[in-house]
Length: 254
Ligand code: F6R
Image (cartoon, rainbow, N blue to C red):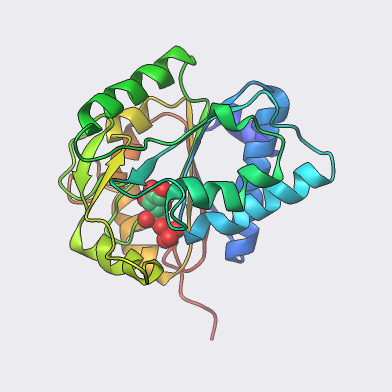
């Protein structure tokens, strides 16, 4: 079954790959096939280490002439608050460096929910309106935090939450502080809500490594539990999970 078929027929797909790179390739193939089938697709994008090989593979496919992003619109999940967009650790800089600078996407149609703490409510509403005005997200790419977060919807987030200012969980600060050597890691972010994410027509989650195994387990079994925000994905009809064996909870062969 090719990835286009998977996207059309799946209600829930849990695919286990031999390595992070193989999972990344399969997720990249799904994004590429989505854009080939609908050149003006609206993509929801994520940052994080898990996505780096996904974007590298998309760039490689673009360079080979396999896909064009000229008509694509993108919405990133989240951004740190009060961090200038040109700071090297902003998600704007990260996305430019990993993807946007290397493909033919029109940067004026690459949206990131930038905000300062004093204008975040208005910016969040604008972001929701903009997503709705483009017709909604065709394919939302997600990573998952070790604590089960999606976007920056930390444990306790409501199933119906929309784009808003959030305080980062201590575990998230610990996981990401290593990237900030010139200033303290921001304590707040603006993120699409769980409800915003569930409004996407298709969702692809990539998770690799043992540190994600418990979160993946809680996210895929047992219904929604606010302690694991990703468990809300069980309520969506078209979710594909791209896992390696460690994230799927399988023990490595001796
Ligand atoms: C990033 C994001 C986060 C990450 C998650 C996993 O835009 O929304 O939810 O997807 O924290 O991060 P990595 O891939 O670094 O483990």
